Image (cartoon, rainbow, N blue to C red):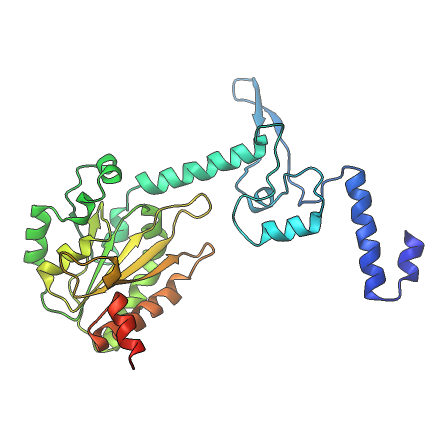
Length: 309
């Protein structure tokens, strides 16, 4: 093989040599993925044996191919690198490999933390947000009754009516939605960009607040009280098994009871973990709101208005 490398005259020759090396590694059963540490036996505090498993969520472990002898190793590796979907995980008989199962369980645990987590008061206090609630009694009911998450409680309606400025250009509000982690990780970055961008555009802003156990449709109840031209709701998205801290920005022109998703616009997948950066997304929100107010429309009607120009 050394002589072949010395005689190589062109990129095609080198590619042929590399292909031969990979083929030899496959025949010898050597791993082609990124090497990861294996289980390690250590002594516990009580003197007993403890098996210390490597963290399955670390990137090298997550990207290790689980197929023992793939027909096209390079093709499979490239395919797996192009997506966060669980491809090339392999199997042991009819069962998933232990590493695949541990990674799935770890990712599932992150989603549960995001869904049942609570946005810390310090996150709200940093932006001067007071808290109101929907008609949901607790998190279990929130998951089972989406309709109640779209309606403010009577006490919250009174609080908003008492504390919020009315008839402004834009009402900003934040809801936990299905991921507290989305708010915790992204709000501090995106909120100042939106606030400063809208003020720089000469638009007046309402009194911001936080809605606990919120669904997107609560925008209608909110604007029935504050009467803003446009409402922006920053809310946690449904967590996935790859990313659990993605935020969405829902926007509507004059949302009122009876209006639906067709009347709203959306920027989704706002996260630093493979989505739209919160700083960039904030700039998009500002431009979208300016268009909504310019055309007095949002959702499908905004598309029609822009298309008619």
